[in-house]
Amino acid sequence: MISPAFAADSAPFSSLIDVNFILINRIFVLAVTLLFFTSIFFIRRSRSQEIHPRIMSPIKLSIFGSLLLYAELAMSGMPSYQSVLQGVQTIIVLVCLAKLVNYLILDVYLRIHTQREVPTFVRDTVRLVVYLAAGIISLRLVFKIDLSAIVTTTTVITATIAFAMQSTLANALSGFSIQTDNLLARQNWISIKEKNLFGEIVNVGFRYTTLRNLENYLILVPNSVIMQSVVTFHGSKESVNKPAIQVDVMLGYDMPPEKAKSILMQALRDDTEVLEHPEPVVRLITLNDSGITYQLKFWIDDPSGRIRVQDAIYSRVWYSVNRAGYSFPFPHRQIISSEAKAPFTFSREHIAEELRQSELFAVLEAASITAISEQAPVMVFGPGEAVVNQGDGGSSLFMVLKGSLEVSVDGLVVGSIHEDSFFGEMSLLTGEPRSATVSALSEVWLAEVTKELMEPILVSNQSVLETLSSILAEREARTIHSQTIENDATSAGSLRKEDYLKRLKSFFRL
Ligand code: CMP
Image (cartoon, rainbow, N blue to C red; front, side, top):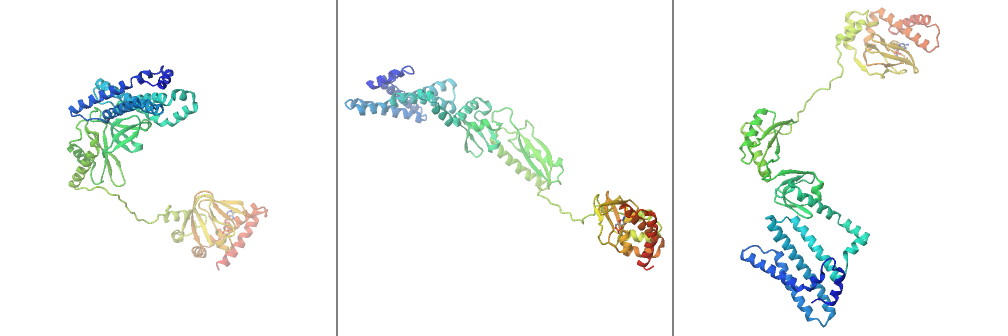
């Protein structure tokens, strides 16, 4: 039966597989395949069992192969056609043989051995190995290509194939791990948060793991995704330690937590799918803007009932809450209207007290003190802030109620002013621009006494005018001294005091 060409070619490969054996026994292989699968066909038919394509296709193939064999014999006088037919026929024989081997391993040996359906992953792996072997042999026999020699000697091809098969290999290797992991066995429910997946494992294949979600969709998840993601195990109907289900319910602030907890617990107990053990738990979790959040923790037998039970519990809670005379919270927003509040508050009594202690107003009678304290606005300055600037116009005097200030002329510090003292009297009394810049050294509280407020006081209190004149003269002298223009500050000050008094009297028409 073997052609001379095949006999010659097969010699170098005999070390791998006894090719001659296959070639010589082509009829034998076809006959055995046909006989074996036909018997299976009739047995299954007599038992009214399903006839899989994996039974029908080898029958058809072996019949076709036999016909080709006959054609090959008939064309013995036409060697070119004969060799083509021979090639096709060899492939068919090898495929038949592969199908026979697959069936014997998967549907006979493993089925009898494990007494259950062979997992898709094992089925795929065995098929892949067997077909790969058949493919390599047909490449050698029909196309005279020694694949192993090419792959091992050509680094580039090896690298290319390895690169191209990267993800396939990753999935296949991941498939092996998934297969060996009990938590990832069929019928277990898992979720992959980052992929938003939740479903029951229905199959672990060579490249994919198939999940059936709650909507009954089949989702093919690449094995490598499962291996690289955080997978949450939700158990199965059979698992002993089932994970809890947690749902949140928000109820209003008008419902006391004890009442809320008892309504929620009752809703859980009334559901037949919620297990009695472990006992359900209801906890107050947070006090939110609009209401109080309670967490319901419970266990159910069948992970697929998750949404169904959640629906039943929420519905029951709604009725119970409304029956109890409460409603569910909605976003609340309270609008508070109020006047802007000054950051500092000063009591007029406090200001009057400060005025009484001051060097300028200590001599005044109570009525004048009250008039100033009630009419003088109080201002607060922070450290470093200038109250008056040199050269600016101004007609107010400032009483220092709290804090200290620094006086500078042309950038040169000429003096300082402390609590119970005052400044700004020069412009007020003379009408001239501010003679110096006065800045706060600390937080200062100042009562501003305007010229209008000061005038009647000066008219009725000569002593105030005198005090002012002397302080004014003294400060002027100190300023001049600081600027080293005048040497005899005291004599210049006393002279000036009289000058000022005269000027002031005429200024206020006294
Ligand atoms: P007036 O000129 O209105 O504005 C700046 C104020 O600084 C001035 O009034 C005085 O009250 C005050 N002043 C000027 N020189 C001195 C000084 N040497 N020591 C203390 N206070 C001063």
